[in-house]
Length: 94
Image (cartoon, rainbow, N blue to C red; front, side, top):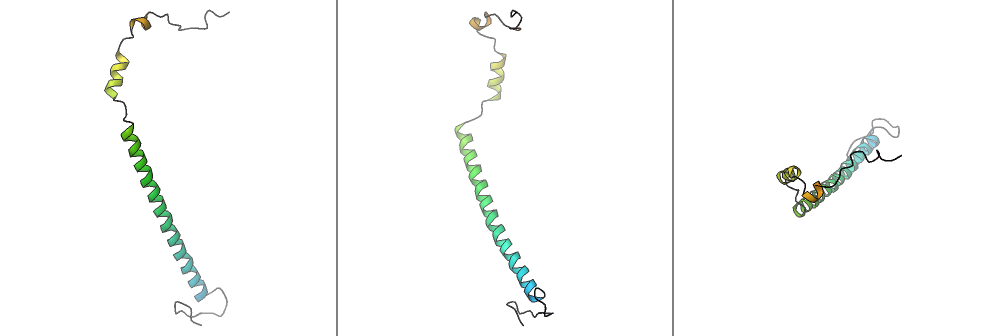
């Protein structure tokens, strides 16, 4: 008995020969179609993420490292420098 692919059943038992081969091919083809659709969705999501990230970075530029370095080496203003430091705030607690 020929199947859709023109093969003949080698043995008369169900699930062998043509039927099994055609079913396997059909499942493989369905998997390829589903995988292709999934890969397209994944690529679209990745592109959307990259676009969103680029938009965020363009609207929120990172601080300049040199400016941060200069700010960290700047001495404290006199009103802050004159405040007492509490290195051990628990020392006076009984």
